Image 1 (cartoon, helix red, strand yellow):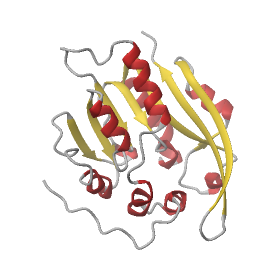
Image 2: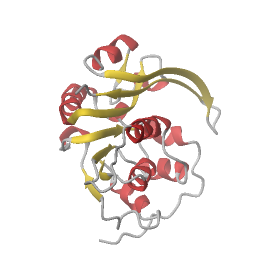
Image 3: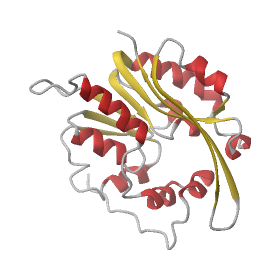
Length: 222
């Protein structure tokens, strides 16, 4: 099914303002053309050092959970992975159509599903770049259990959690965690990369935004 790309807004503005309001077409417009997230690249590089994907073998499966406009999905496909790209907003896949050949890629499957009801297949790599904070808090624990059980032995998780000092922590429909809570969520995984970032930004309207983010790459033991 061919979809026409959405009409760009007159002024995309800072991406985080659109994230605050869940105005996803505006967010996708603000970040369109950017490269893959660092955590996704770190995980893919780690797999590459292990010889994955292996030449001449069936491509391993990656799930891009909250795939957005497709920056990480495109990188996975370029590196020889099969990808199930999941997002809860249809506009995400309209932006996929802007990337030449992405929607038609034979190793891509797209699914329009919200976090609260999404079905995650067993996979070698589960990527969740800046998406888990937008899972509703009452659904987060169940989603995390599904994520943990979906990752094969030797597979990896890459993504972000937002901390309790983030400006958006006061928004009722966002999932935020203390460092201790994040560490507990990762128990049983081999944590290969863990970085806690705090920084401040100012949007075009002069409103402050404090970021508190945990960046993670973790491996499922074999």
